[in-house]
Amino acid sequence: MNASLYEITKKISIIGAGAWGTAIAIQLCKNVDELVIVTRRLNVANAINTHKKNISLPSFPLLPKNLISSTNIQDIQDSQCIVISIASQDFKDTLLQLRSLKISKEVIIVIATKGLLTDGSLLSSITSKILGNRCAILAGPNLAIEVACDMPSHTVVGADTMPFALEVSKLISTDSFVAHPTTDIVSLQIASCVKNVAAILSGMSDGLEYGANNKSWIVALALEEIEIFSKQLSSQCKVIQSKVVGDLSLCCNNSGSRNNTFGNKLAQTPKEKRMDFINDYPILTEGRNNLLQLTALANRLNLKSNLCSVLSNILEEPENLESHFNAITRLKDQ
Image 1 (cartoon, rainbow, N blue to C red):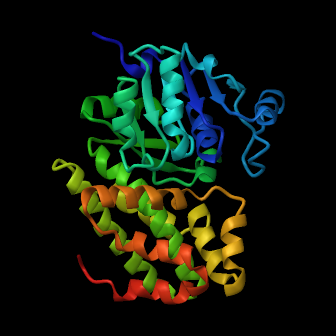
Image 2 (tube, rainbow, N blue to C red):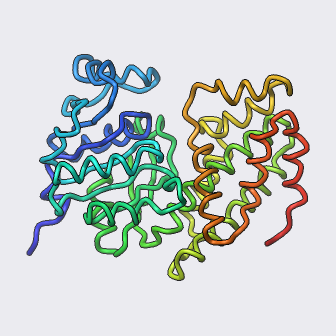
């Protein structure tokens, strides 16, 4: 009998030491002998190795002893599994780096990045094209801080076949972080973008004090757009599965979401200062990148995304946020 992925995996590497990458690392350290987390920031790597603390994440707990950090991507070469958890705009360049390392085709790639390429292409598609390795999608619904603090959490692993999705789910699951398999990788990736756009708008709804009804309508519109995009890309997608709903609901209804917080703060900023707020906002807000990616995909598929249109108008003319936002209440079923 062939050994399972769980049995043969002794070393996992994670590219990206942000909140999500670090949270995943904390959990996966329970399952392997060694875990390497790669970061471009030398001070972060040094602090992890010396003090077992990610200094960019002060609210996170101390890190496991078998977690080490490096700024050299070559240190991942003997890993059996590589998790990529970086900003979506850096994803393709990272794949090209991995290809230059000539990593084995047996290495499993787990995509924890949320988003698409700038032209709207799926991350799973470009991974297969550039590397040719088997890949899986790690989708959520999760807040990184809760995963890091060992609070009971569930996540979704998508892959092109159920046996492979089950194998990766077993590799990733721990006593407090349980992965559930699916083969609907298209919907998971589309949802990872749409949810962030919806989360920004939901935060704006809170900032404007528009109440729960309006925010629930945003969630309903987001589900509809996930279905429309996904079915255009794949006739096999199941779309409205509980995992997609959970991820969307979490991001839209929780102030721990960076996208939600951005929208809330923007709506509460005085009109004349909103453009400066957008330009100077110091925290990575993935939903702003996802907006551009979804718009590119919509143009390629000849589709219209109402949520993207509303958010685009707001970010271009934030002084008119209220009037642009109110267009949401006039949107009807597509």
